Image (cartoon, rainbow, N blue to C red):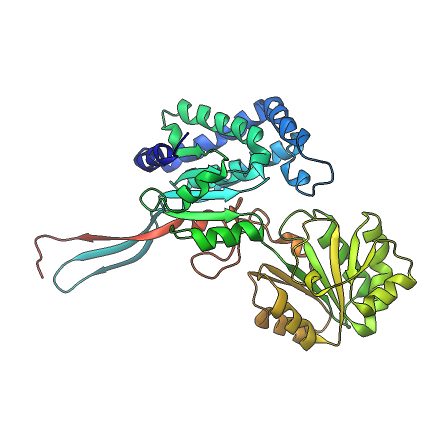
Length: 415
């Protein structure tokens, strides 16, 4: 293929087809797709195995790539959850009548064609397709080569369901993985209304630097958990371990532990066994290194400057001992990606200050950052976690896949 322009043209034309879908039909389509996914679990798993077999076991992205029966069932549940959400389009935002009789309304409408560039996450294929269909959008998907076989199976199933409903298959397009087509996608201002990169910081930076199509950033998360000296240390240790090991390859996983010096030894003594169980490699500043060395923690490195502000996406984290709240918040301000940040503390005043002063899409008191998720927040699913401030921030889900449009009705008025 020399160019993806024909595919993009088809996607643009398909916006007319999806606009004809009623709210009820959108719901029926997603519920039908949920059934089809479960019915074809074996085919999905077989396609996924082809991708898994090409990825070394040591690659932390392998967990993100995996689809098994449980995860396929979760996808089906998510499809039903999205179907049950209210249609975000057609909502009346504003209405007025001018002195000369013009009747003016502002309503929510679909964005149009949504382009998503993502890496080893085949679940994104289903999530994005479902969210776009529910909100009356067309999507063009550029998944990573790591998940190619899985994505082909998934999109073929989506196309089969679209055909059952008499709809244009171009409502969901899977683009080739050849890198030469990325720039064509990023400059397709005539056919794509918005680009959403979901993946590594390198991917996001590339899209931001090169896209002529408006972009919403999602993905990179450098997440801190600050353990303040009044915290319940047993609870804090449990939160730290959960935030790191429950699923380290995702963007809401913990990257850096900040801990007040009076409780540093107690925290690390309690957290170390839970981290050791998963062979977590710790990059420690001088104070925490001495404590962990005394504890005979085996997977220990002296931290360098580069180990702070680093998204590990693996069983790795950094630790820094701080002199109090102000030093912790200053560190977060310097190194955060503005994704998810947490304080563990019994000091309600400091907790409220943390909520108000820390600049991030999601800010937590006494809880794991692993909860930053569209499904957990009651949004059904998400395209990703937006770390910017315009249009969408936090879980970028159904409610944000719309823009506004003005409707003006007159009877001959001239200006």
